[in-house]
Length: 164
Image (cartoon, rainbow, N blue to C red; front, side, top):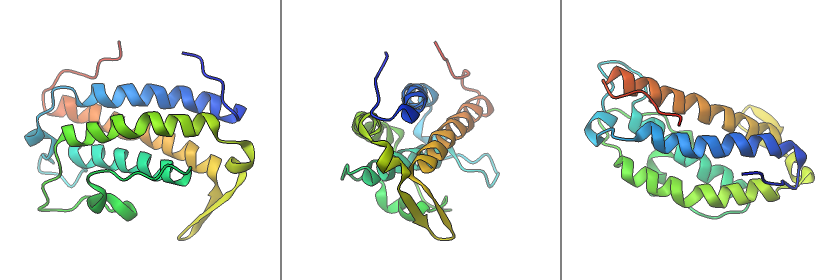
């Protein structure tokens, strides 16, 4: 699907975004909610946290671009909260429902964002960067987190992530 973006800088990022939108659903396919909470006796982020974090970041990015929506698990993930011990995270279905809700809205925002807006600076504690740099980082982070979920699939004896 070819899409013309308002900023030529967003063209490739939208292609990656579309891939991640699909791979996210595929990565979670068949994982039980019980397994999604399993850290396999490590300190690693489990599938439920990775999933919720990905969803939260899409909502946060959408908010920066004027889409005022909140995910169901906002309280667990707002302000970039890390994984919490002794917390049962929502079901994967809850997260995928939010993913399906925000993804087309954020995609539209990505398609329509202008170079002027992408050049605007964003400040976070200890950091300052352009909106374009932030979008680029989040797209990179999505690939990283989806890859971690794919690894969890194998560690928990699920079939590998299917790309076709």
